[in-house]
Length: 132
Image (cartoon, rainbow, N blue to C red; front, side):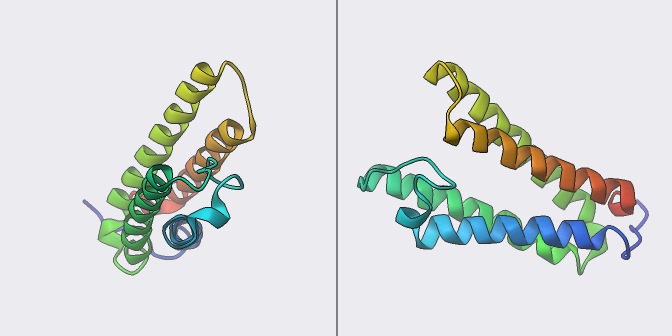
């Protein structure tokens, strides 16, 4: 596998990784603050709060790998694949919620919009050479 050109693809990967990191940190460290804004309402309950923290920790781990890939180009294809896979599955979860809730609400809309923006970011990085 050839190594990607480090120039043009780095910026969208760094941007996407940083946004994922910030979201993850918010969910992990301040779940009550992100609840109802950029995450489902947890209603102050310990179970949903723990679930949101765990969701955030997964995003932090993925963001760390993604940001590291900007310094190690041989990992860029794997970082893009993991991020795209995560965004596709997040969008699928939102689609399942759309069906379960019987319609669109703010959380479901965000659950579809944010992964779509992520997929657009990884697509730009791929077109700029991140896949080699």
